Length: 336
Image (tube, rainbow, N blue to C red):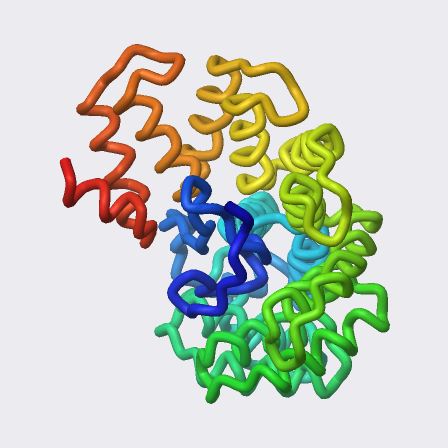
């Protein structure tokens, strides 16, 4: 069965952090997830803010945080990974989140600080989650030509978060980023063409854009491109090419690429069958909270595919996958 195009919001809850092509029935859609993380929760006074770090130093830290997010988004890294790296960076510089929040609220004078203030509101960092405020801040930063904020706007228009859903605007914003050679924007535009988001479906154009983003090192695009070669869509079916693309995506630590590489080893796609390697890759991606890998891992435990059958572990991973919204896992639990 070939991959089906999906436009359902349940399957695409946040488009910058998920595969832009759906998988087959045995390869359900990857969705977003977040980790609850503990950070330094020092409540600073005005005095110790100035004692711990100079204003100009804090400004530099904030600019570096924004740069980090932008670079990793363009590499195709996943949302929870970027978020962890942001928190690690902040902690490594001995700054607490409250300090940054206070500084941002008093320094809304450039696109980076406006964007990051929106980021704090979107995720509820030192404030309540407020998607509408986040949208307004991202919009303001986008008007100042902040590409990172524009990427976030595309997601919100696609999902209807903080604003009414508007696929046409999402498409136009993606086209604008593609002109600027922004890898994540190029990959996103490929998704638009592949799924008819704000434009007519054009699978050939989607393939070309995924190729362009992959050439720029985007690990999501590498995985998406691999799906084209695996299924023989637009290009001739080439399992060897698909395997190499999934491998490169996996080497970049994209859980979707890791999962698809595991699939290749399980079924012998472009390589020899190696159930042990398949199991290890599914385990790795499952630990990264990838619902597809969790489902596949559970299935291996249930039927004893290359490993000793263990129904308790199978149920454990089906539950984990189901909690992330995987409908195949949810159905499995009803059958057990």
